[in-house]
Image (cartoon, rainbow, N blue to C red; front, side, top):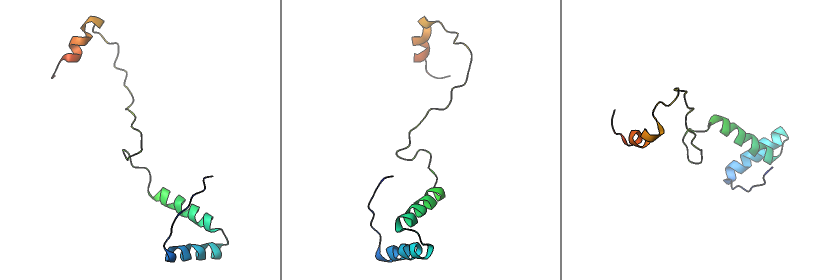
Amino acid sequence: MIKTQIQLPDRLYLEAKRVAREREISLAEVVRRGVEYIARAYPPVEGAPGTAWTPPAAEHLGAFRASVENWRDIASETGP
């Protein structure tokens, strides 16, 4: 488990302490449950910063029919 430090506005801190007291759980547990809730409400966004891009799965298109000698010419072709 990672230990961290956060800052809360006074009003929010008092509300969190109230919830902890009424539910007889720790303030840390209130915060953990809050983060779990918000993480479910906001699933990861595809292409968001920090997410790794992975190429789409390749399709099997059969054997490549051009000879190795022609690969450079084929790669240099433009247009359909």
